[in-house]
Image (cartoon, rainbow, N blue to C red; front, side):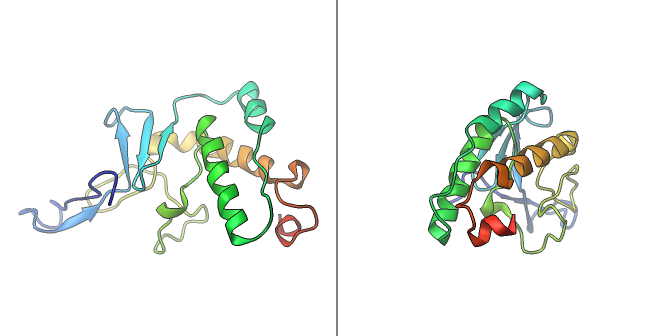
Length: 156
């Protein structure tokens, strides 16, 4: 079950509307909104402009993983996703990654067209560096997110 209809008529390819295309997010209010609902139902409030105070608050309570098993990593990721959402930082939800997307970030940011769909609207592109830096800082070795000397800790 999808949280909203992700298939809409592809009027560019088929003016009669008998073929569909996928949408990857819903913006609220439409076109001008700062709330994004991803195709897996996650709501992100992305209105805030970053500040040093915001980054400090984000880094203050970063959740840690209980271990390195797949279940431990999944539980950490789920908690980290909640943490990022609470601080208006976008992290691409796991179930929204597309096998066909080869962008280094794993997701795209641009204006949708009738022929091409993107994961985030272009209006949030200026925040990508802030979000990325905040996330990298949070998962760096200094914060001990993963058990020390574990294979994940060494990889990071």
